[in-house]
Image (tube, rainbow, N blue to C red; front, top):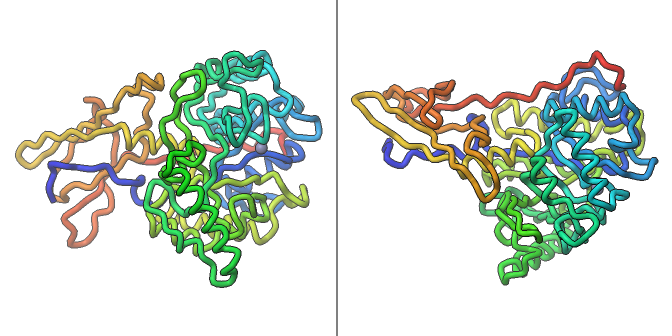
Length: 417
Ligand SMILES: [Zn+2]
C-alpha cells in the first residue's frame, strides 16, 4: 500500500459504525428510576429488569423544573451526589437546558457554579421544550444566546465548557456523515405511512439545499457543523436522528426504542458506515418499577451484541462528538526511513472555538499501514501508547490503533437505589 496519503480510519478499530443513544430525561419520575435505567444500560449487574445490557449510554440533566420532575435542584442530597458521580464518570454528558423554570442569567450561573464546585464537566448542550435558556431561535424558541435577554448565558456556558449544542434538528435518515438513502426508510408493511415520512424528510432537505438555515443540517446530513450563536460565539451544532418509519417524533420513549433499534436499522447503519445520535426519552415510561419492558430490554441486548461482534461502537453523545472533532482536526504526517515509519499525529488548535490541540481526544484513532513495516507512533511529537491489531491472514495491511476505553460506571456501594 502507498503511504503518501495515510488516512485515519472512519471509526475506532474494529467497529464499522458509531451510535449514541441520546436521551432527554423528561418525565423521569425520581432518582431511583434514573439510577436503575443507567445501571441496566451501562452494567451487567442484576437489576429490576434482569441482567444489564452492558452498553455505554449517557444521559442528560436539567436543573430548575416543576417538583414533579426529577432534576438537579429537585433531587435530595443522595440524588445530587448520584448526578455528580455520573457526570464525573462521563455517564451524564448532556445539559438539557437549565429547565423550564430557569428564566435568568442568575439561574444559569447558579447551576454552572454548582457543577464547577463539584468538579463536574459537561461539553454537550441539548435544548429542551420551550425553555427560556435554549439556544435555538427557530424550533426551540430560546433566548440563551441573546445578550440583551434576561436568560442570556452563552458566554458563561461556553466558558464553563459547552462545546456542542443541539437546537431541535432531527432527521429520519439512517447514518449521518455519510450518503443517506431514502429507500432505507421505506417499509413494505407500512408503504403509505413510511412514504409520508420519506416525503417529509425530502422536503426538509430540499429546503435546506435552497438555503433555509432551519434545515441546513438535514440537507448536509452531517453529524455536526460549525455554527455561530446570536452573540457571535462559535460552537458546533449536531443533528439527532430518529429513523422510525412513523416520523421523527414517533417512538421517542423507552417503549418506542424497541421499535427503533431493529436489526434492519442497525444493519443499514453499518452498511452506510454512518454515525447516529439517536433522539429519545428513556425516562418516559409506564411503570417505574420496571422502566424497560421485555421488548426494550431485548432491543438493548441486541444492540450490545452488535458492539461485541465489532459492528457498532456504542458510546455517549459527547464521546461520539469528541471523536468526530478529532478525526477532522488530526493530520498524520509520515517520515519513512529504511523499513520503519514514524507517524506523527498532529492535532490542530481551534482558536475560534477556544479548543486547544491538547483538548482533542486521541482515543480510538486508527489507521491502516503495511504489515511488513515497523511503526513508531507519535502524537504532537511525543510517543503514544498504541496497539497493532487486525493482522489478517495473507493480508499486507495491519491496523494501528490508540485503544478506545470504556467509561467506568460508578460503584454501587452508595444508597442511590
Ligand atoms: Zn426535554
